[in-house]
Amino acid sequence: MNVRTCIAAIVVWAQCVAAHPATIHAHVVGVSDGDTLTALDANHHQWKIRLAGIDAPEKAQPLGQKSKQALADRVHGRQVVIDAGKTDRYGRTIGKVWVDGTDANLAQIRSGLAWHYKKYEREQTMADRFEYAHAESDARQHQRGIWRLPEPVAPWDYRFQKRRK
Image 1 (cartoon, rainbow, N blue to C red):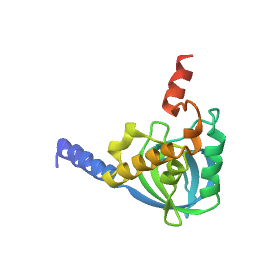
Image 2 (spheres, rainbow, N blue to C red; image 1 turned 90 degrees about the horizontal axis):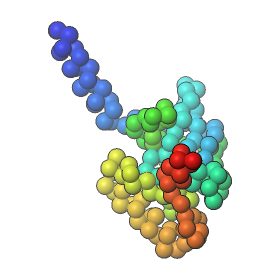
Image 3 (tube, helix red, strand yellow; image 1 turned 90 degrees about the vertical axis):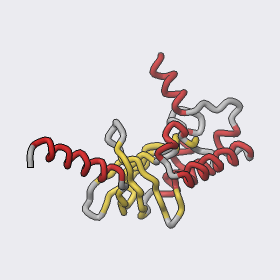
């Protein structure tokens, strides 16, 4: 086999691996904010997980601490199943987190403590995309969490404003 064939085979293999998410069974040992947690698997490998499909208020934003606490109450110290996808630019694994059969990512949106992160919705299944969008709409309509604020600022806008300063 020549070098080009080997390289092509490696590229195809890497694309297949990247296209098929892994399932991680782990114990949550930390929560950084409303959309990021740390978990340990059975081999004591530490996983930094960024919850897929959502963006929670930053800690310094209104309800940022409440969002973090809600996620901690839901998952900290618990066994979770993570449908892991890609890795972000910070080295975090992007994943959908399940605790006792409940989608923790979706629960953050339903409680009004995270936005549906539409910038990345194409990476979601159609069912998740619809369910997350519907959950955000319902939280807005019922003014839960961030939707009670007079002018909620999306975390991506907040981060952009901070970088400009």
